[in-house]
Image: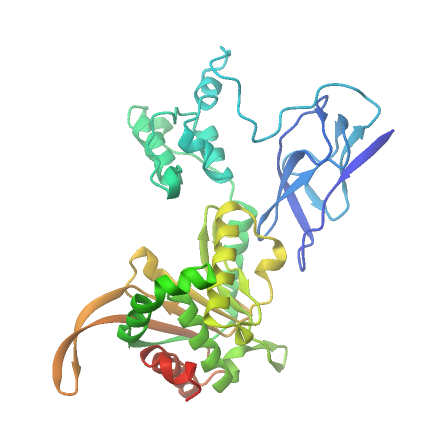
Length: 394
């Protein structure tokens, strides 16, 4: 009997995907639930598995093809008998001579590469470089993209200059990022206001309670939990920043789903913490940790990335002192966090050294007035400088 592999559900608001690659070829035998292909959508990559065991007799949607939900991608003959094709992540046999030199290099990965994520493995395979001698700098000794690129760069130095450029088509995710950021610039009347926050109180709380917090809740006490809670408190005071424009109407949101910008191997993604107003700081930190892990391992689903009412981005983790974040359209507000630096400030007439952070709020001036925007940012500042007042209901 012949059955079809069909495009899986793509998620809310995603109409189609592109076939990024096939992990098996026509004529291969596959097992039930074996990973056979990867799809690339505007938001995330998705995996396609075989519904039943059999022989892949025909690939209908080749690499690069556009597919819609439930569209046939390949045919499987379930009556055929044979050995299944190797799984995508299966380790190759050791030290078996092969004809193509690049395959020999990639086929002998280091332990560090074996522990790395799929994006790093893909990069190592595409570079064709020997990664067996690289010391991984990632968590647990994993290889990072920078580690692999370091090998590729070192090798490139000896290549002729004529081969030092490469043209690569933009991924669907990168195209979407570019399109939406440009849409925000072309549509919204964006304006940014700045303030600075004395982070002494938050840092003191973290230093005092971080060990007990992690022991009790199973997640680390970071800064993002405080900032997310501060944003929710401020949004409740200034609802215009938790709204969007729909034609001639303003749609006010009575729910608080906060997008947290995360840098992944495939570009910037903004997974959403749902119902942040109903979560404790521990709940927020746990949700952010889960989404961050998914972003790094490629486990985000399309529905994880839609429906945010406001966003937060943290350029400080890369060392940024100040920036103007761009709206995540159609949202009308985004808060930018930056690096914490000790600076001299005047407190009660005395010059003291305090850990300070610049914060930025970009807003859509079409529906948010300057007074509201500035007051919103002051409310965020007040929460962070005296978090105990709000946490104690004062």
